[in-house]
Length: 600
Image (cartoon, rainbow, N blue to C red; front, side, top):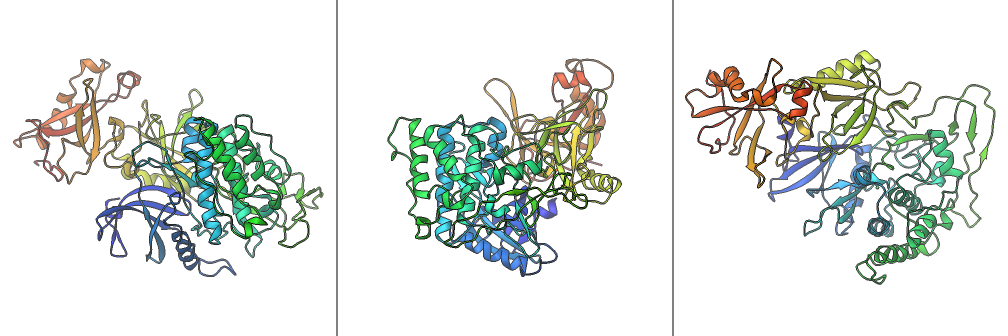
């Protein structure tokens, strides 16, 4: 990974650290070497072949990014600084905001959200969407994972609301109708007119925003069902229940945006007024105090209204939906593909007509539980996600556990997805997972590689997920390149070659922070050793264990000494008797920048 971090894009942007993957590419923390500032750089995954009629995908990506750059001055849109090309693909250079997380992560942590907070998020997202709509820019994929919450200028967490991934997806089957009659969207968030063959419009963005706000305030999306088929049918035909946790003005906005007919959806100006009222109600202020002003409606909005959206209840994987005949279940029922037309005639609503198939229906594109119902996940796993696992007794790391997505930093996670693999057979998947995680596993104590393959019978299954766990311990936080310099880290996250700074807190505890070894640091990790026997952690001199194994090479004659660290008493008693060995200066001062080398 060191080589990847040192890559320079377009002769200017030096990649430092991968921040995450998803949405059509990987996002990196980078340094703008000309301005000497940190930026986020999105590496766009360009398909090898273009779909007929859609032209050059890389060229379309550049055009889409340039459209997004038109919104760079909007306070609720991630600013695009530059669009460059390297390695035959476009790279989007954006502002970097430390402490940012997406709405789906927030919903995972504390769903449902209070009504006034949902109104505040909705008002900001609506204003961002409306600004784009006035320029003719359609987002096409409004959902919780595309709404970011960042600290405000005073450092208060989650106060800034930012819309991201603004129309720069380069997947072959984009969120629009293609010549093959397919459309991409997130099940339950795609507007019914798009499921029926219509183009993405401002109104369809508004429907997706309505779904997102519903999911945020209720804790579950309005059209969420047990199967993909049922979810699609509900989005097309079912009227959602009125949200029970929403205030009256917020409820009116949500229901107004979820109208099946785009012509019946609540106008932007009215929605903005009601969201401001819902936000102000919690503080007892007037509707105009501290709220987002209603956006100025465009000429088209006086005739055809529109809307926006954000991670867990809403954070499903994008799937491909057949428009001409979305097949429902093995019983052979099909959805009639009624197209919404932009004419003066009344818009016909989609209906369901039952047809007995002459041959068995093909399987749906993606199941409601892509890894099987026992796993319980309703969304695709992506690299960097952290999980807790509910294993059956006696079947740890075998079979299919129940998995729960958790926060990598705050929830002391048991495992993490390191990479994903698409392969033709289970053997290929396991072999590739083994190869891709070998270097990281070599730095860990007692790692367990677990490969989660998708449920069979899906014509568009997700990639298999390669997860790492520890026997008798939790990983405690992100692993490998998913960590960031400056992060607080625990013993189980560290390995040979890592460097840390230590700070004693007021209560006498010590906080360790991961740092770049090129800078002065307190300790450098040299390896692991094992405490034999069955004594308690207090009965073992862990420094002596490290001195016996590494001291002659690492500490001899250099003014250095060996230190030994363990995780927790509970994990020690459970069997994780591994000791992390570090080298430090005897006088307690920092080691100079640069990796310490063994004496022999």
